[in-house]
Image 1 (cartoon, one colour):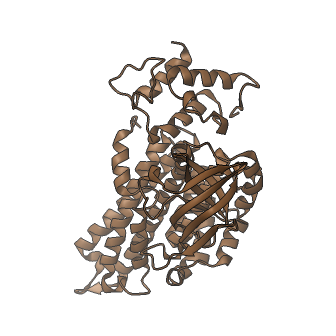
Image 2: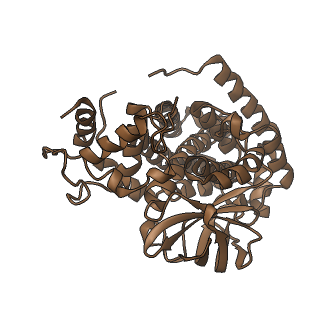
Image 3: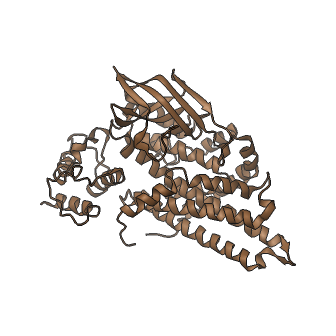
Length: 88
Length: 377
């Protein structure tokens, strides 16, 4: 697990107590995600990684697992990458 | 965490307080009776940039930090909850639009909203749907480059005069958010009168009958209307309501302290009676506690901290509950004089009760708050 994935896991683990969340596990299928977590997850990704989650990024597949969130962050971290606006 | 205001924030609070004391408080009971605030007040708020206070300068707003915004809503809310509720719903629309709106919609609406030239309103509740927002019955059907809205919205604050509605509707079963202009064919606005509290907040019922809005009016995507768009708006709304509740409680405290000095019973001013002093003490402690919770929520929001969501919910929960309790005590202290038609504390009580219902009821907060993880301070 790389540094990005570790940070994501640490954040999600605050909500998924007593479960060792694996990188590819579907957090929606596990029933862990609700509307209370949704915007916190967006805020976490933006603040921790200095990115702006935008309209076009709103796709459940981008937030489905640690791997998926990590991939979204990687794409948006590339200058000129998919909707890669930085929060500056 | 910094627990003190900056000199700039203190100066801004003084400006808000002076305006509210001179331009709002003396007239609030009359507006309550008339069930409307005057257009002149809305123009005065707009002229000061206070209807675009949370929007950044590049969008035409005043760019207030979140603490300063909280001070604005507390001071306006101290004078008149109906006037504060205008700021709340209008700012929720601008904030959500800036966060999730399409470029075309931002270009068209943000600057007029920021200048107060257009008033925004938040249309989520329906005749059959309140707390269970995901169960909304309003529908949006895709039709070329448009969506067709059909359904009813109810309890829309300032719906009577709003120019732009943030409307929530389901697209093939998925909640979505749209902007609808007031003059859109198929949209009709019916005033609601005789509310318990915030009577001057000009509530309305909205009827959407084949109401066509452009695709560019959608905020976010279908499936994210409640969880992201409404949540963005409601986080700001809860903060505004929390601060406004502190304002109500502060007003209750000030009125009660004054009355307890001048009113003599059994040969003593009321403030010499221990049972009255107990009520005043509770109000003092709750004002201070509530203000600290608001400061923490504002501080975290300003830093875009993920913890802001939960802390804002706690602030809204606590402040609205203690405002209702304090307002009830304020009426009790005033006795029959607090029950008359011209009584400000009677208005505070009616308004405070509304705070326990709007932007997530007390019971919804009680269900949600234990689900969060709260790190140590």
